Amino acid sequence: DILPSDLKMGLEVASCIGAAVSMTVLGILSSHLKVDLAGILERVAEKGFMDRVGTEKYRFVHYRVQQEAYKTMAEHRRSEHHTTFGLAIYSQACSDNDDDLLRISLNQINRAGPGTITDLRQKAMIAALNLKVGRRSATLTDFAYAYFCFKNGISFLNEDHWKHQYQLS
Image (cartoon, rainbow, N blue to C red; front, side, top):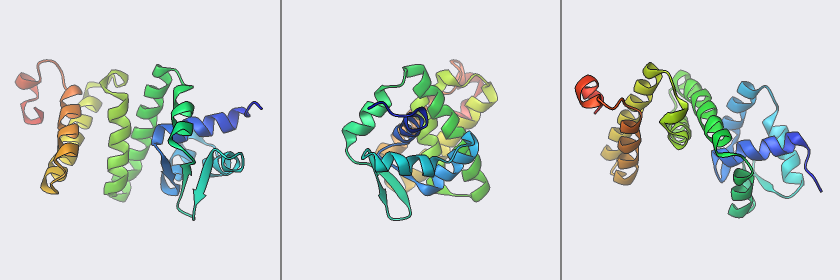
């Protein structure tokens, strides 16, 4: 049975976010994409690919379902989605001053990597965000995540970052 294109799109979006997608993130992405993602994921759940967990999120019924939905996209499409979703969530995280959304947005942007961002100011902003979140994670003794942020942050800097972006290096 072939899935309708809107359900495929819903699975793609959800698989990029992770094993589960909160209603908050769905709201942000619905607004950005101009579609009713919660409604689409409700139909996806009816097909048995995801479960609704209370009123707060949808989750994949099995990690293999998420993996397969993710693998159906070409690599460049995944990267574009991660960048687009990450920047949309980042915008909301800043206006709400929400650390959880900030971390979700940063994870999305970092998964895409620096190759999808061409604006040098935006790359520097992402490097600074990685530094900020990495420092915060280190103070909370989440050293593995801090290292992840520091490593990703440096990848968004120019090759001569020690010379021209020393504060971020």
